[in-house]
Image (cartoon, rainbow, N blue to C red; front, side, top):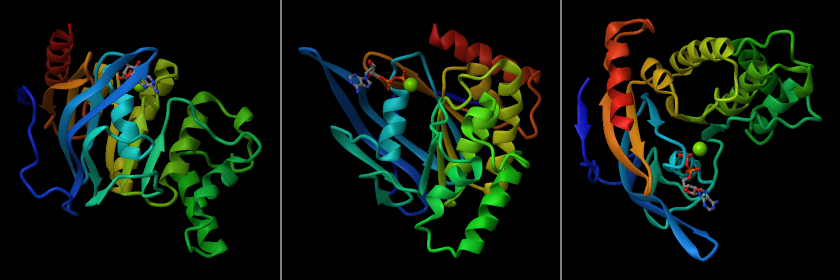
Length: 264
Ligand code: ADP
Ligand code: MG
């Protein structure tokens, strides 16, 4: 539980190492807003190890979504580089699953069809695709809802389906942009535990955006605290506590207080 202040510099290993999960090197991004240029990210460098559960935490507008979008290949940096498992990110790929705050399921398809979509070009036989979808429906706890349409699902169930869809092609990394942000607190708590279970079951790397300090310390192996204008890394906090964790663990509560204080 060490708080490292300041800017992490370039990764020690060569850029694009296949065994590093994510490498972000001196990444900057500007947006044009009317006549002005807004700097969303300022020379952000970060390495995410294979198998980590890392959260990006910070106030609204500090560039969390922008950073995640660049990991997904949905946006490109103005300066700097991003590589995921050794490959420079240039465009979206099914090898990097992404889930947003809204489920973005196709309303005219069933749960099963939504999850199956990304498998159509996977090279798997129809039988293998069906088996993978069934496995995922069980994994996210949506048994019996195969044929439901998105409008028939609660918010939590829709997010479960969105997570299953992202996991279907067996990505090595799951990118989550406030996936539980729109849920009521009971559903949110339940899905936090489910996320941990999925992360352990699928053995993937997770990078999650949140502005909820408690969620960040409860879930993560590391928390990257960001600050805004321009978006930068303020500090990185290792949460080296054993799992399963208890929300009331005094060490977690202390970390939460420390992070909250650093954000003020
Ligand atoms: P966060 O997810 O931490 O709330 P964002 O990454 O969404 O922050 O935004 C960071 C900054 O970049 C904000 O000032 C935001 O207004 C700006 N920004 C993000 N996307 C765009 C865009 N497409 N056009 C203009 N400005 C943007
Ligand atoms: Mg955001």
